[in-house]
Amino acid sequence: MTKKKILITGGAGFIGSHVVRLFVNKYPDYEIYNLDKLTYAGNLKNITDIEHNKNYTFIKADLVDANQIHSLFEQYEFTDVIHLAAESHVDRSITNPLDFVMTNVVGTVNLLNAAKASWKNNLDNHLFYHVSTDEVYGSLHDGGFFLETTPYDPQSPYSASKAASDHFVRAYHNTYKIKVVLSNCSNNYGPNQFPEKLIPLFINNIRNNKPLPVYGKGENVRDWLFVIDHARAIDDVFHKGKVGETYNIGGFNEWKNLDLIKVICKAMDKKLGRPEGESEKLITYVTDRAGHDLRYAIDANKIMNELGWKPSLQFEEGIEKTIDWYLANQEWMDEVTSGNYQTYYDKMYTNR
Ligand code: NAD
Ligand code: TYD
Image (cartoon, rainbow, N blue to C red; front, side, top):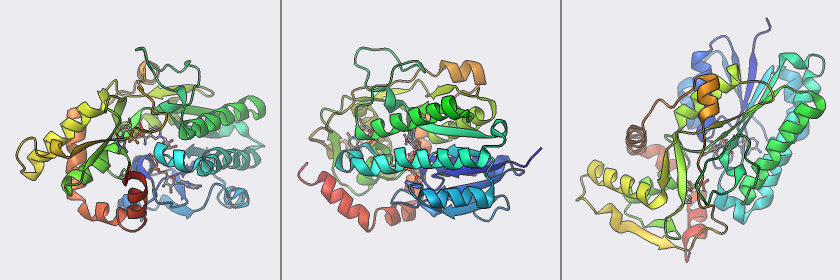
């Protein structure tokens, strides 16, 4: 059997770094190639523990550069792809939708084209795994859950770009017979998430006694999954998923934003030795996000029943681990929040 040479895109980002670590450590016989542009969200410090492993190679490249991606397939002869690289923050997509079209749509099609050209003589021996989000299904208003069969109804420029990329992956399967598999996951939390997203942003602001900007009334609901459980699910889908299928991934763990924020505040008071209720005083209601999706909730029964995956951590344990990680990794936080981050923060939150 040919040796697996797996191209993982976006492996310097939040989820990608956990996926790369899992594959490098668990599969010493695979060669793992981590392709990343290193945007503001990509950080090689997320994966220093595995950077010297014999089965690991880092490639700095931009998915939007079609020629570069084609050359890399020629040079390394990747056997499979796990595609995570993306622009991933909804608020940024509202400010700069075209960046999302370029990386998420054009970048995905470039990757599909390069894989198609490289694999054309033996399509059956190769797999293209596309990692996506539950946000493609839109917003739930009247109860219920997102199923794999729920019609797409993306509501933000981010989710529209991810939905378009999902469609292209399925179209390449149907038209060119590339073997594909997809997964759509709920909100992730855990170590190494860039602090523009709710949980790390609020942990960092509490530590620095800064206001906690709650959008609208804080009534929006998200379904949270610990990032390492997502990485474990990606491992299962890659190895056991049925070609052409989609798997929804989630932990049946819905939280209203305000309730979640209060859990974080309480835990932070304890960890920082502050009087109970101190961090909650930082809560500040700000103008709502434009087009803010009300509720996401995943029905994860298919992956649980068919692939035997289930989350390993209860939310209470996961959030505790997450807070501990950010408090223990102050240097990581200080580094990613210096420089351009300040400009971003001022632009997004001043006079909001
Ligand atoms: P992230 O923003 O933390 O990381 C994205 C990575 O992609 C970064 O390392 C960045 O440098 C890289 N990248 C961006 N543009 C690139 C380009 N043009 N070429 C090459 N690399 C580029 O994102 P994340 O939260 O880790 O999300 C990873 C994937 O999982 C995305 O596809 C996202 O849609 C999906 N997803 C995320 C969540 C979540 O809660 N974060 C939930 C479900 C699905
Ligand atoms: P986020 O982490 O950006 O993920 P997503 O929008 O992809 O679900 O936001 C999670 C929820 O928290 C979402 O309902 C928006 C809200 N939110 C705030 O209230 N304040 C903030 O500063 C941020 C970043 C998010």
